[in-house]
Amino acid sequence: MNILQALFFPPEQPGGVSSMVPYIQERFLKLGWQMELFSLPKRVRGKGQEEIVFETFDVTPFLGDPIVDKYLQTIRDYIWWTRLRLKKSYDIIHAHHPIAALVMKQLYPDTPVMMTIHSSFERELVLNGRIKENSTAHRFLVSIYGELEAKLDRLLTVSDSFRTYLSPFMKDSSVIKVIPNGFDEKRFKPIAHENAVPQFITVCRLVPAKGLDILLHACAELKRRGHPFVLHIIGDGPIREELEQLAVSLDLYDDIIFYGYMLHPEEFMPFFDVFVLPSRAEAFGSVFAEAALCWLALVGTNVGGIAEQIDDGVNGLLVPPEDAPALADALEKLVVDPTYRYNLARSGWDKAKKVYSLQRVISQLKKVYLSLKPEE
Image 1 (tube, rainbow, N blue to C red):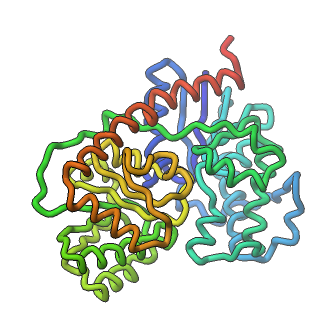
Image 2 (image 1 turned 180 degrees about the vertical axis):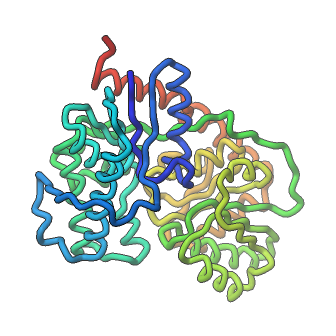
Image 3 (image 1 turned 90 degrees about the horizontal axis):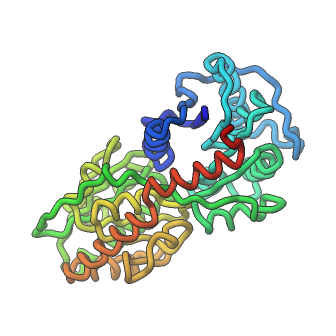
């Protein structure tokens, strides 16, 4: 079987989708299946000219909004690039972004096209303060879900909570199959170590949705309680300077290291003790599973896919979003009791290996692919 994995970002970009799909390709190639990756390069901008028609809603009222206009132009660019680069047919196309999915179905109408909905662009924009709920851009972006439901042959998503989030925007969200992300455990190599001072690490894009302002306030409270620590922040983004200034104002300058973007943070994580990320929303939160496989104790917020990965007090700790004192309390538990921290980390590793294995994803995807186009 010949399958095209249609991404939006190139595979080398950071993030759960980009880090997982190449490993999926590697496993299927070993099984004797043909599989290619395709994405839109950043250099392709403003090339496409085709008119875009939606079946389930009228786009006219949304035109003129800058976010909508950019989104539509990106669809045109993806069409232009796809026509230029792809010259063969495929048995199945598996898209990982709405733009890729809609373009592929337009250009390959007779080919089964499925999509995994990994996250919500509109929710990210709301949480990052770029749009308001029920604004023109928000209404356009949530309308895309109905278009995907109407046009595509199969829809997947990464958590039950995210399927629930999608349900108001679709006629029947029960048709969406949930396949949580999976990870090649060979990438993760836990290392026995003893840190005299507890080492916290977080890995994310530096945007408001990730709640790093809450993390810094929690760390300031932990410091006021007399607990030493070092916080390592891996990632970059538009609020890095703001976070650095906040760290200075909270007297945390000597307790935090900002590393910027790192391609393979999983090679770095095993040397630390606690992974913490107080996201305001998260469809799945791949980095939690990755941190668990590095044998780190987990601390996250009780939102979305994070709450499906962490059983509070069993394989990690959950706190409410926007609650710096509660986050400080959770971190304090792990700082003062290394045995408790170790036991949580061990339980997290056990669950991640069993539930979030890449082999499980391969098996589930294979069933979906064969249901769309059985092998002859």
